Length: 318
Image 1 (tube, rainbow, N blue to C red):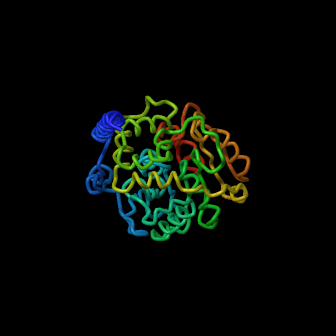
Image 2: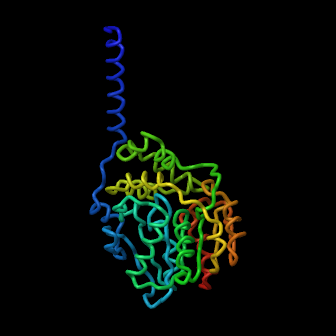
Image 3: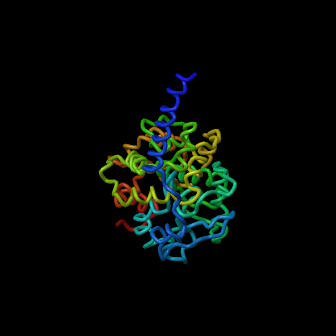
């Protein structure tokens, strides 16, 4: 017994020191919303009271446009991922974008329900509150999945659809961001809510670019700091552990709207085969593949990736 005590005590001390060291090095407190607003809200930012949340959104371009373009970001991102696209599109069209619940300045759903049905209902309520009855809907990754599911549920409210490396089909990722992996591991996922190394954010963002050298330090800062918004880390874990709704190919095949499928050829998270499957199943679709770009083409090369969108919407090129 004495021998066991002699062995156990040093192990406990070492483990305690190790955990303490990790907390000191990688444990981050939440950043208050008001502090984040100083950096990530601007004069175009507005906040809508919806489902108990203050939804951060921006409404730019000519307000007389009765069919605005609605841009929906993906997992872990924010409305800022469409900054450059908005600059181009808002010259001619009204552009709406929001921080989805769980991300950005908006923060978590109050009921922690991150099903695709809840996100679709959220978009419907968001547009209803703004009085938008008809729109062009565009989404990246998770945002793309929300966009095509919304179009399936509310076909009369969508004029055209743009899917940017959209999720939905069962896929075989060749590379998954480390943050996505950690958020789904038992025990680790709970530690993730308060131990969040910046290098995990950096690695995860670089993972979805074809060329990691294009990831600017300020982009990493944005992803990392917005993750630290109160409630967002738990929401990130909740979202990635939400049971996936069984995929319905029939839903996709029933969508009649003209659809632009825009895909980075080097997307390792949602491979090009998924784009080809969308193109096969959507009866009125155009597929544009962007060479040398990854999962977030609108961020990695905004000027090149927005050109097909301008053409699709019959707008002047940059």
